[in-house]
Length: 246
Length: 101
Image (cartoon, rainbow over all chains, first blue to last red; front, side):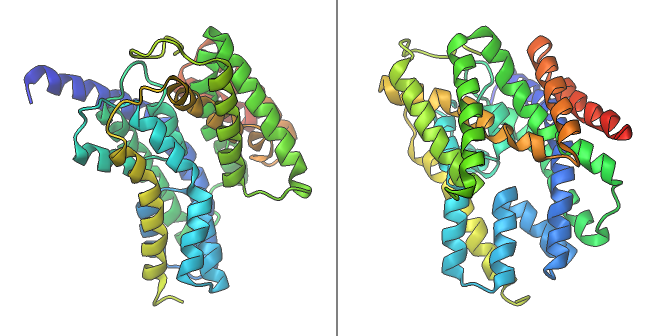
């Protein structure tokens, strides 16, 4: 690897670390409640932290604990995880088009490990191609927040003052807004897309009394349908690189 | 239950990782089909919007603080766009509102 390339990776890594800070803070708050749940079903703090380290998935981890607490089988665990986490399949497809065709297999394996809603969110919307070191930088700040939050939640239960925990729990949503709103401001198609998605999501949340869908399934189905319609109605003509949208 | 925790975890983490890694490792080429490209380009915006709303409204201790946090984050995102400022601005707004509730 030549000097210039290494400098470039370093810059991306540092940028990723900076963007990872709000993710880590939000993770800490969410993971804390995860740790409390883990404690309640009888997991040790180390087991809880290990679970968070290997999975990096909030809904997936809650579902895992539900399956364990119910004493269901391994097959049910596999199916539950498949359903709840299926949206990552779509994110992985999208990210496969965001990285360079020449990206090494090892990088592809590594970057896949960190496809969480948040790291995917910032990685898939950078200008131009995604340098994997950006995602690694974000992950190396965000992941400790996730793992440590789970660990502490399982050790001490509720130590965070409830108003601090309440405030921190909007950090992740704020971050999502910071990712989607600026492009929506510049690009009318994306603005319509964002508004439609929010409205549809509100509608289906309201309808959940009659049409029970897990939040993972709701996200997946709405994404496929709305992005599908948008692609049909407004295909992006330019087949070369990227996103003048962003 | 404790004994087979690690088998449960192996299954759950294994399935989760496979879901994340299969497309990334199998789709090595740039997709040329214009519709699929457009679809994948739109995916993050739709997914993040669906995840944010209306979930943000029930994320905090009260819907009032959450609504204010949402609006503040929305405004900062619109006029500034800095990731850290938006996230922190939302948190601070929620915190301040809850002081008065």
